[in-house]
Amino acid sequence: MKAVNSEEKPITSMANDVTLRLGEWSGLCNFIVVPLDDFTVILGIDFLIKENVAIMPLLEGISIGDEYCPCFISKIKELESV
Image (cartoon, rainbow, N blue to C red; front, side, top):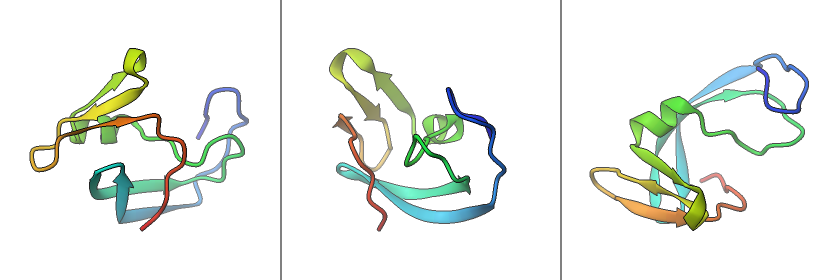
């Protein structure tokens, strides 16, 4: 796996059906586990498409168009696991 301005790192494992909470929204997500120096988590294209996410840089946040819990999340500083 290669992130911007980082060295290439091997994928160490998968974590399936992990509960992720972002502001008011929560849902099950699958993660690829890779030790990274610069990032806590990278939300990839699969997450963005599955949860109908719109990135809104001008408003400094993201809009999640989830059918059951649509919401706007501003400035995600740190993710916490549940």
